[in-house]
Image 1 (cartoon, rainbow, N blue to C red):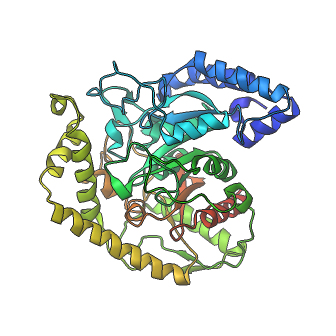
Image 2 (tube, rainbow, N blue to C red):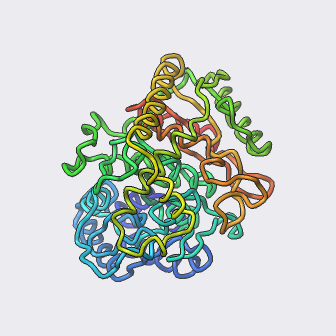
Length: 456
C-alpha cells in the first residue's frame, strides 16, 4: 500500500513490523505534496529537511525496538495558527512580521513533538482564521481535492484538504465556529471539536470560549489517538480541563447500541439543500436500523447568529488591535469590516451575548437528559465555488449564514464531530455531525466510530 493512502494507525503498525520506515513514509508524503499541492494549495510552509531529520530519529527508535509515543514517526501537518518552534506563524496575514524570533511551541505543537511525530509543515488559513473558507492575500486560495473548482471550506481548510488529498494522514486545526467540522464535511474527512478546554491553547485565543482545537483525520480511530496526545495538560492554559481518566483510543470501541439518539435535520430553522438532506437522512436511517434508535427532535433554541457574530467580531477586534500600525490597510477587506464592527460593541453587549450562549447551553443540557447524542447535517450545502466567502449564487452576506449547524455548539462548548457519509451526484462530500453533552468527548468518538463502521 502506498504510504500516502495509509492511516496513522496503519503507519505505526507498518513501522512496528518493519514493513515500512518513518523515512520512507515521510518521503512519500513530501513527494506527494510536491506533485499535488500546486493545485490544492493546502500547505503554506513545507520543511523537507526538518521533516526528514525527525523521521530519521524516529526510524532509529523503531530499529531499536523503542517508540517514543503513540504515533512516533507519523507525518502530521499543523495549521498556521499554532506557534511552532523554528517556523513562523503568520496566521495567513501580510500584517504579521516574519522577521522575529519563532522559538515557542504552542501546547499542540509541544505535545506532537514530545510524541515523536514528524512535522511536514504548516497548513493554510484565512487571515487569523476569521472565516469559513480558506483564502488569503498571503497564501492564495485553498481548493477542494474532490473538485479543485470548489472551496475546501475553512478556516482549517488547508488541514482538511491536505488529509483528503493524501498529503499527510492527519492534521490539527482550530474551530471557533465550525472551522474543523466545515472543511471536514466539504473535503470528506473526519473533523473533531472536543469540549472547550480539552486541548490546551497558548496564547489564549481572543475568541475566548468559542475557541477550540481539534484533529482532522481519515478515521475516527486516528482522531482518538491524536486526542490522547493533544489533551495532555499544559500549565499555560488556565482554562484547560483535567486529564481524561482513561484513554480515548480505549473508549472508541465501547458498546453504544441502544443509546438514545436524536436527529434534527434543520435544528428547527435551517434550510437544507435537498441532496444534502437526502444523503444525511439515509445515513441516519442506516444507524437506526443498526441499533441506534433515532428519534426526530429539535433542541428547542432559535438561531443565535446575532450573539455569535457579536462575540466573533469582538474577538477579532481584540486580536487585531495588537497588530502593527498600518495593519488595517493590509488585512482582508471582509476582516477589516469585522474589525470595525467589533470595536463598536460594549462590555455589556458582550455579556448579553454570553448570556445567550449560556441559555442555549442550559437548553442543550436538558435536551441531553433525554437524548445521549444529537445528529444533524454538518453543513446544509455542499462545497461551492472557490474564491468566495459565501455561495456566489446566493443573497447571503456573511459566512455564519451558511454554517448554521456548527457555531451553536461553539457557543455551548460541546464536543461535536463531522464524519463523511456520502457524496452528491457531482461527487462532493457530505458530512454528518454528532454532538454530545459537554465533557462527553469519549461518547461522541465512540458513536462516530460505530457510525463509521455501519456506514462503511
